[in-house]
Length: 378
Ligand code: GAL
Image (cartoon, rainbow, N blue to C red; front, side, top):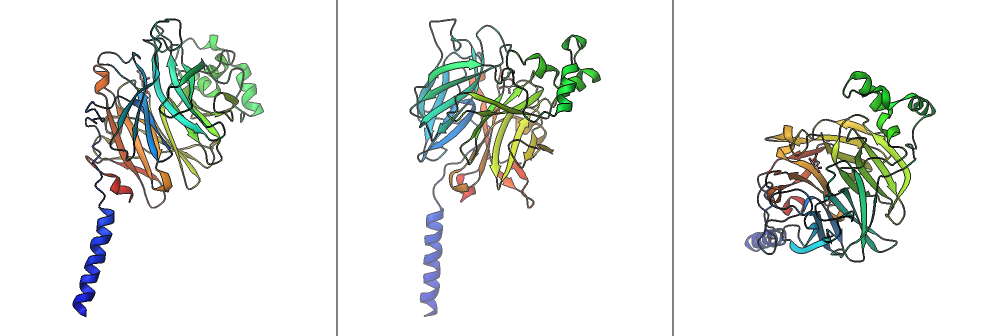
C-alpha cells in the first residue's frame, strides 16, 4: 500500500514536471539572435505587440554602414517570443521621391505599433528625421494598417501639440512663461538658462510650430486611451501626450515630465495601478545609467527612483539603452527590452531582453542574466 502511494506521488510529480518542462529556447541578452532564415534579427529601437495569440516585433532596419533608413520599418512574428519569422519591411522607405517624408536615407527611429479596438486598425508611430537634415526636424510620424504584418500606409508627420500649453500648467507658471525670452539666453548650460528651461523656455519657443519629438513610446491604458511619450524641448524634457480615439493624432492634452532632466528612450508599463517608466540619459549611441519614474496616474505626479538595474555594467544599463517593456498576456509579467547600439556597424546592434523582477515593496528590479528562458514566468 505504502509503495503504491509513493509510486502515485512520483507519477504525480513527474506529470507536474512534464507539464512545466516546456522546452523554451534560451534568451541570451547581447548575443546574435537569428530569425527563421538564420539572419540576425534587424528590428532595432523596437517594440512588441501581442495580438490574437501572436507576438509582432517592430523595429528599425539598420544597414551595415549607416543608421539612416535604407529599408524601412521591419516586422517579425512569433508564437513564443524566441523563434521569429521575418515578415519583411512593413513600412518601406520611398525609393524614387526625395521629397517624401520617408524618402530613402531619412531617419526612422523607435517605431511602436498599437491596435485600436474601435477602428480595428494597427497604428504605427515613429520618430522621423527628414532626409539630409540630420536630427533637426524632430518630428513624429504615423502610419496605419489593417493587418499587423502590414503593409502600413504612411499618413503624415508633424511636431505635436502646436499652439497648446501643458494642461496642468498653473496660472503662475503661465505668467512666468510669459516673461521668458529666448533672446536672453544665447548661452546654454548656465544656471539661469537651466532655470528658464525648467520654466518652459523651449516649450514657448516651439509653441507656434509644434513641440519637438524624438525618442518615443506608445502606451495603451486599460480604458483604451493611448498616449504618446517623447523626448521634447531639445531632448531636455519628456512629454506625455494623449492620442485621439482613433490613435491617429494628438488631442492637445499633454504634460511635461522632469523638465530639464535630459531623459530619452522612454519605456512604460503599468502594474497594480502604478505607472512605471524607465528612461536613459542623453549620450547618443553610448550607454548610460538607466533612470526610473513612477506615478499613480499617467498625468503624474511622476517621482524619480534610483537605477533599477542590478549586476555587471548596471551603471550603464548593461551596455544598452531602454526601448520597450513588454507586458506579457495574462498578467504573467514584464520583459525589459534594450538596444546595444553599434554605430560603426549598425546592423550588428544587439538586443537585451531581461525579465523584470519586483522587490517586496513592489519596486521593479532588472537583474542581469547571461541566459534565461520563458520558464521564468511560469
Ligand atoms: C540616441 C537615441 C537613439 C538615436 C541616437 C542618435 O540617444 O536614443 O534612438 O536617436 O541617439 O544619436
